[in-house]
Length: 165
Ligand SMILES: CC(C)(COP(=O)(O)OP(=O)(O)OC[C@H]1O[C@@H](n2cnc3c(N)ncnc32)[C@H](O)[C@@H]1OP(=O)(O)O)[C@@H](O)C(=O)NCCC(=O)NCCS
Image (tube, rainbow, N blue to C red; front, top):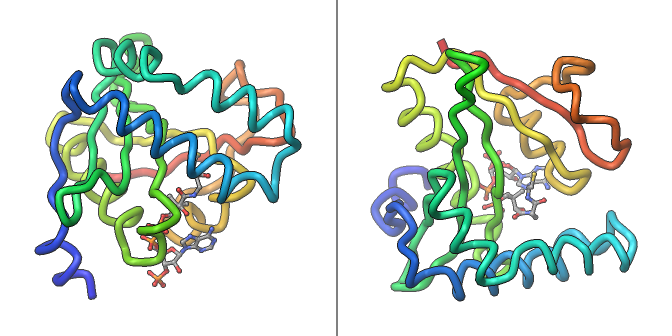
């Protein structure tokens, strides 16, 4: 299955012209996949934080990648290289549209992120997991950490990391 999905899915850098599609993908995923784990207000807040203009800003400040299948954007992932923490990169904005979930696209995006960051001397990947995706990240070898990311105080997300050396 892994080989087949690699052939069917193309991962590329997001362009500004993709902003609307990426925003729609994230909003649909939040509403359909995350809504069983978070209250309505939180989903609405997260949807509002991923508008088309927020995505355009993200493209300018982070490395946002998209997975394309059948000429449609099926998923996305963003990488942030923290200057204050050399050797560590933060993985954010991991979403696979509900219509494309369960086909290996999330796993492919995560392994692509590992490959790209390893090539840039990154030794540790960190992320904040949703409740929804926690078991997915555990399956990929991420472990819960606590206290190492000071911004994290919310019980509804998990700080996780993985050594990619
Ligand atoms: C979590 C998410 C990115 C997974 O994407 P996906 O394309 O469906 O995942 P894959 O098909 O690549 O699954 C890879 C493996 O993880 C497993 N898996 C996927 N989602 C899972 C979940 N929520 N819980 C447990 N295991 C999961 C699959 O069964 C598969 O296992 P296998 O390799 O043994 O077959 C996707 O479900 C999603 O976008 N969720 C909502 C948004 C979200 O919460 N994103 C994370 C923000 S931090």
